[in-house]
Image (cartoon, rainbow, N blue to C red):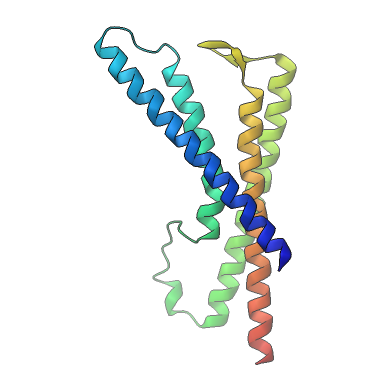
Length: 164
């Protein structure tokens, strides 16, 4: 499917951005520790590390879900019949989609509110908060796309099983 290929490309791109954000967080944190030994800590290191970590996690959500690398406890469900397992998967993926739609909506609404108030990072007055909330929302939207792709794949798999 072309649409799933496009979603995969987006998730891979976001994974790369997340890796860069994580690297940035590591460099800032390490630099702060080293500079702290010379009594010159980086004043905004805490906020920058938090921003970088948030972006890294938000942008890693989709690829983690795509590759099914998330934590799963399915000891009980493995013993259920295949149809019930598929129904359970459908319910979980639908719930995941609904949850991330709400989270995305909230983050975009927060971003608009922060832009309206002009709020900035405390230790970096030149850095507005609204783009950060917007980026986190974008990460959640891509997670929604992955959830939709998972649901479509699950439904197609079920229909394929019925025709065999």
